[in-house]
Length: 105
Picture 1: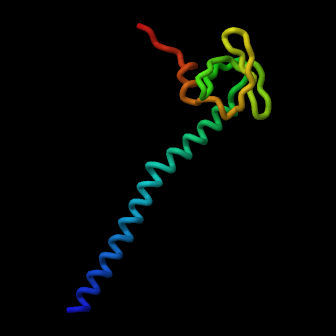
Picture 2 (picture 1 turned 180 degrees about the horizontal axis):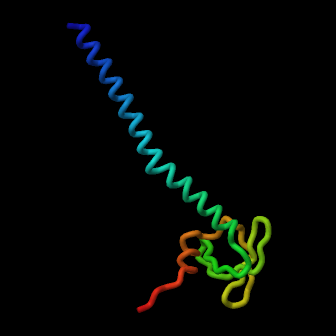
Picture 3 (picture 1 turned 90 degrees about the horizontal axis):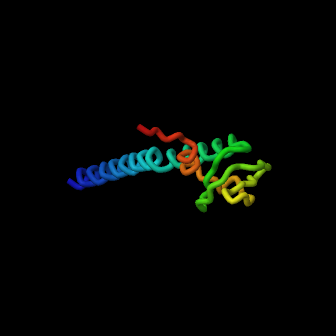
């Protein structure tokens, strides 16, 4: 009788271990992997930017790239002013929306 109870308790530990493993796999595929992909896309997008491209910074400043340096951009704003930003300050989503043509009917 005691052996049966101990075997059942041991089986519960295995089930819990499998459940935690499944939770870790789900967490990886739904949380970690998309974030890593997003970071890679952001890095690739920033590396491909060149002079004349329109961008939006994470602070919401719109402008056109005037000069590209190693780690910074010189951005020309609408009024003709120029501001230097770090490359990490470029917003991928907002910049892509700015550069996609809108379809009008």
